[in-house]
Length: 497
Image 1 (tube, one colour):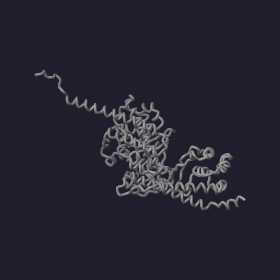
Image 2 (cartoon, rainbow, N blue to C red):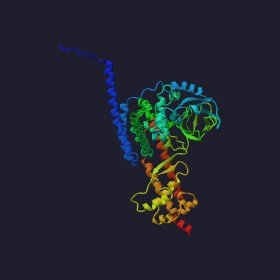
Image 3 (cartoon, rainbow, N blue to C red):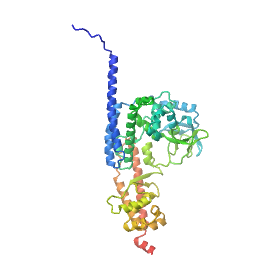
Image 4 (cartoon, helix red, strand yellow):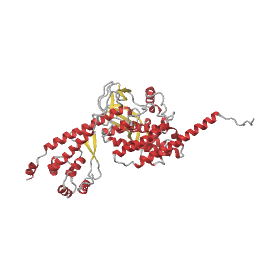
């Protein structure tokens, strides 16, 4: 019989080794995928072709799905938002937040919002939030993250990203001062970072489709950039981030910042901040009624209109088009008086008058402009768009005439004297050209699929495209009426004589 081995196997030790091998293998696979994401997003960062952008997004999406699979399921966040409301309210009260007459509540179609429990008159003070409760980029710089911020150029120039990384650290710190606030934040958001490929594709032909791809590409690149740094650089705070930094956690943090950030002035400097409770207010058209009181060191929110007891309290997010609200807040506001639609126009490289047209556009600062706005309302054509369609539709003689002037200011104005200076012939061609373009764009829109089980993402896409079609139809009506009012060539000639 052979001699027995003197060594005894330790099951726990072996299990630990196996687990460590598994982790190391997973990190190697992740590192390869992350590098691929970095290369893809670097190469096509400046791509302007929508078809190519979509093809790239499909490549990026495959890699991100593999990364999500390797990084594993998102850990459960605990009891959920509802169970943490009492702790949040207690935290607010302990820190001198004015809560008289308001409470956190759920509203259909909004999830959480603020409800009035008494009557508020327009202009009356609704709530105040002391600066000590605000979670700011300044707090991030003063925290352990500060050592990383000091050496990273991206964080030094992008406070929103700084705040996202700081939020990740605080979220995973059980002793964080902001824990009651972080615990009532949503687990995910209706931003495009959570859209499926099918939901993103339904954005076409909206110009927001291309903007969404660029935003997703930018966040994927940021993730890859920070993943590499976090796992390569030797800083204590980065060791902490290693434990919590995944694509899913990063898109959550970024979405939290996009949907909830505020810019306030602290010590005569603009600071990006989360303002607890204040950021629970949903959007409604009106005027800005929120401000920071430097003397009292607090944020103040005033009623933008009368609110009755039981009503949801709204604030105005600012003069932003639905494209912006959709991309960065995950919402669409149908009554948005500040809505606009971006349309792509340019002078073809095959146009024999291209150089003369570009020279005239240069005088107006429009040579490099490729996107122009249509607005909602009675005057849908922006001054820049009006100038472009006029110049685009000029012949050689007209271009020569206008190029000989100093600053052709009449080209950017539709008032009667400017229209007379431009001439009905040019305007008829210009407006007819834009009318035809609008008709073609409208024809390219297709109905987004409906059904009772339609997701919030698809609802927002459908609503966004509906608003865009309404703007196009409004512009078409305006153009038709404007063309009908232009004098005929004979009448214009008689007037000139």
